Image (cartoon, rainbow, N blue to C red; front, side):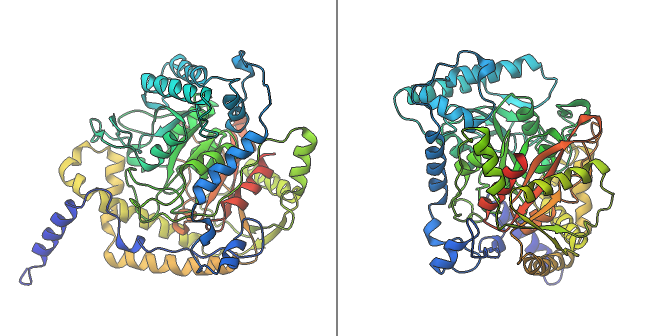
Length: 543
């Protein structure tokens, strides 16, 4: 007190309060990740040729998202029928964006009809799915009419044009309430779109609503004390997972073709795995978090949940790219999105030859707190066989630091979340749900020394895993130790939060069913910025 320390702390807090919610820690403004290894398609060969420094994408890819969108459009166009018949039978409509986009472009399927179908399914559900926080029916209809006019007038924007999608209610949408799953923000009308929403709109997507989540996205299940849980689409006594529970349920139930989620410890991949859809967490910094309510500055990611790997790739291509409003973002190498195979023979050829020369790391020991269920082990083995069938070679790798990295991720999440929420905890303590409040308050147990020590350990483990994975292109792990837990019970982050701490891209791909016919999934992980290889491998498992 004699040195005036408390006054300095109070003055600092006042200065911080004036900066706004988009102010991120300085250490993230110049972050870098290990560079890609040269030598193969999508694995950084362009970086080697361009002489770009390690940890930054090659100069030739600085327009990465636009290039990816162009590639996607050309691929979808290449599979367009010259004079397609009008698809009047809604039951005959394709179930994926990749198959539907050429039909929309050709006028065989109407964006207005697609949007009406989505709104009808949401209405007919009657709230039983509890997937939506807010349905934007009239706004969606107006967007669909605009999309139809543009497509009819020859101004097709790309594969998402006229496609019904949803966004997690953690992402701002202009003139709508963004609750972040909380009571505190129940009347919080945002005056802007989040960057990812801006880019979805620019791609012509029709946003039909905002989806449920756990309170402030701080729980790997759907439990929410203010808005209730989201049941699993396969079994209403089971949980949809979290925190992007509504996004996963809406896609799995066929209400929308894709949805945006966020992932701080597994919140895209976990509900995707439990609901039987694809969930993609891109490289940290691949997509802007501007306009997204913060949970943990250095762990948050935004990405898609979709019905297929190609659909997830199409959505990522639309939202990816640097944003001057988010200093964490970086340009990224483009990735091609092939159209669907023309026939089963072509599909089989792609499956067999797609991963030739790829080396997939399989951890020798997962260091799980709870053992994997037998069905989950069989699902993982099946996925690995699919990778081998497609030409990949399995390589055992030692990731002995899994347990340490898991603890680093949990401590980092706790401290960053508590730091972000501290001002609201002081003013709205009783408005938090008991569980969310308890987790936030508990994190104040950790000292500054603990947090900085965790970041030192994080850096050390990153170096060791970079070295351990030097001779492989991908990692293959289970996504969950078993099937969906009972409603209101949390899923496991034990095998997902590792890659938030590292910032590596990861995808959850459905791979068979377990007990009670509930979905199981494999998690594939690539090196930073190598979504191209990640998607190729995911397609092989999907096939």
